[in-house]
Length: 431
Image (tube, rainbow, N blue to C red; front, side, top):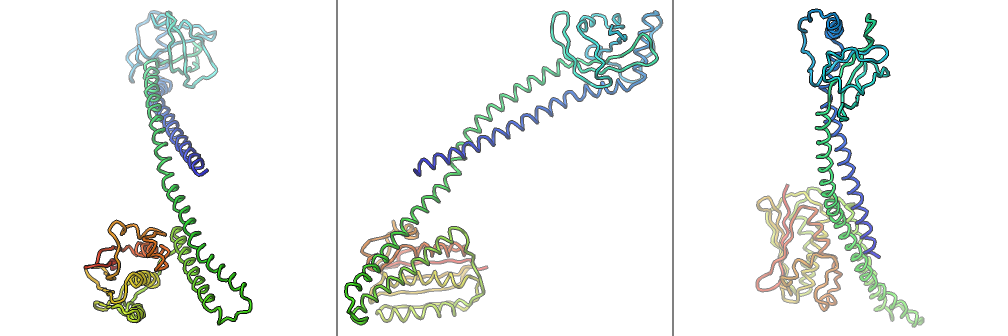
């Protein structure tokens, strides 16, 4: 079921990325094509607008027709640039749609034999398509202007041939489509990669959640089963007094306390995963803080016939979360006491050096194999089962310790103590 859900979710990510990339490429292609096409036709439209508003040019064309008819001398040169005779043409129309300047058009007249006069869009630039004598399609940009005061000439039409521009635009369109196809194929590969990449943290989170639930339920089941068994035992002996069943009640209370601590630890891990915990850093005098914390453990070690040495440097005031560092050190001290026997030694060292607060907790206990040093910080990690039964550990403490160190931007390192045992080194930056 989970695999099917993961595949479906990954396919949804893939489809979403593919549609997003395809939409972006399509919109970008359309925008680029429109901008290129508009810019290419812009110069043609500017020439037409210039000629259409040049009254001297218009009068020149109308008078040229009369001079050709009367065989009068030609007019002088225009002040502005004349139209390009190959790309630009001027057609004079009668009111009934006949071309009046056939002689001036010369051989180009055959290109306009199929051209019809349309007065629907006067004074507006429009596209005109016609066919020449060889039945080839010709493209023009055109503007038709009405004339005034000329009885025979009703309209003057300015045309600019746009076949070269159209060819360029078509080639650009083909290149753009090819590029979009290539980028479309690349987007498929990229979408597949991104869907896999997006799913990776989700799968990791899902796996961690499953492991968390399985391990948590396992850890909770044991004390609950013990408590249930002890309570059921009490019901089998209803006439016994509290003193007679004090051992059973004490064991049940121990399990309740263990269950309460386990629940608190699980809640802390869950809240740390959701980033809902924040540090409350305050100025703390480290030597006073450590002495207050370590003295009860020193007394406990002496009671268990263990050596407990405290070595503190000069008193300094640092900023850190007092509650979390207290919790961190308790976890490490509990482990040091659990894994050492009578006659063995525990040393706590603290100093501030090179802008770092360094704490070392060394013991001469059973130690940790090199291949297990990294794994001990994983949640619910279990070492040797015999050791766990002896100590009653649940594998959460060092995971919480790692989180506290990370939140303080510090480092935690496990090394071997000579000749045996483990040294935990904490390094916190001093700001």
